[in-house]
Length: 79
Image (cartoon, rainbow, N blue to C red):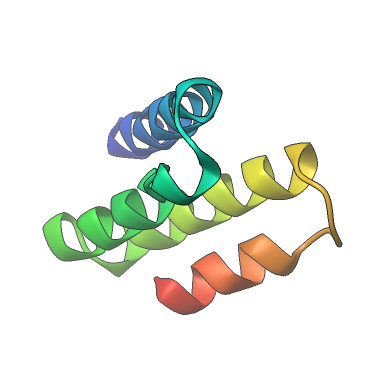
């Protein structure tokens, strides 16, 4: 159950980050996915931060330009 809540929170941060991209300049958008990974690492431990990192990385890699797996690797290093 906690894993599904972790995935839902990461999805919510991703959508909020995308919506903020419509209204703010690119340099003003906070990296909410990275903040959520750090939050889950501090609040719930490594297991949930790894789930959050993989989910966030796959979301950014699948919908963003660039090579696939780069964001996933970066988020896993941050977790």
